[in-house]
Image (cartoon, rainbow, N blue to C red):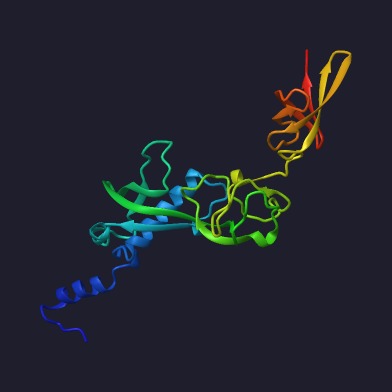
Length: 245
């Protein structure tokens, strides 16, 4: 029921308030709005290939007072993250300078946030001993924060099956490239033949491998006849080569 106190002028004022368009309403959820602005900025930075907004988790810190002030903004107010410097990596604990623009009026505020990039990556499903031949049962897919991790984790099993663990990998540990490797052609302690190659001549000698060797890799071997240790290139599971120019 509308009361006619003050005449038609009062009625028009009340009616005008009731008819304020939705676009002029205050910002309903500033935390969600700021999270969206920062996520768009992170995706645009293209730090992580194929990164989607859904992969980003943002937790704000000490921002309650700032959000209270932002509730006075209309939904016509625009927001953007100001570029600090080109190499700025907005992950982990970070502070974001936000430009708030309403018409011709601009102001800057600062938001502290923890930025996590959540993806499913491979982790050890059980303790994996050094030297173990890897199989699917050794791994599991888990959602992990990769924001501060080295960019050499794994997201699928196929690239690991048939390789071996280069170190002892604890259960539940994220699995990185440096933890695994191809099987060596030559095992430490195995007997090998040294081929000494020179122009127009090849000599052979028996030796013992002092370390694991991979194809075309250089390892130390010890000659059986002289106990001399030399460096040789792995060319097969039983042969290493020393070239003499």
